[in-house]
Image (tube, rainbow, N blue to C red):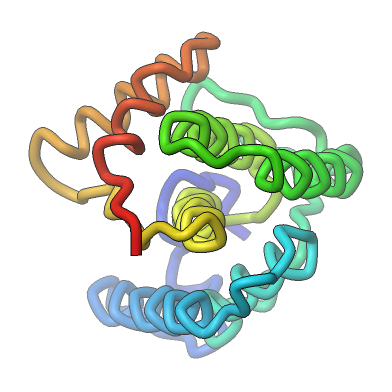
Length: 193
């Protein structure tokens, strides 16, 4: 398996043995779209819990990868970030889900919600619980939480242009302990249903 988790897995890693990178990207995009539909159908009273996290990842990636919806079991390096050891992932994820679920019930103002969503997103990416698809899953989880608070899904990530650079810079600032830039990006995108 490819341990370079900041990139799309190679063709030999997928269950369909797809060798064409563009076709693989299309299949992955289709899985993400299925997860987005799942979120649209989510009960307004749903909890932000482990089952939601695993189901989102499984829905997004199970057509292509046997690791979909399963915690990573290998140590990875993501750019300059060394995520926690895989033995810590289950405990960290249960703590994360409980923390986010509890805090979702406490926040109501748009600014508070944006702060929580920034924390939710960055903390998930820092834990890096899956072999791959962590950034995409983090953005899906961010949207799940936004929807649970009565907001439309947001487009936080753009593949090209200035918006992508702003997003990457916001994540780098969060890595240094400053969630303000990420919070501001999220705040600007939050729109009530």
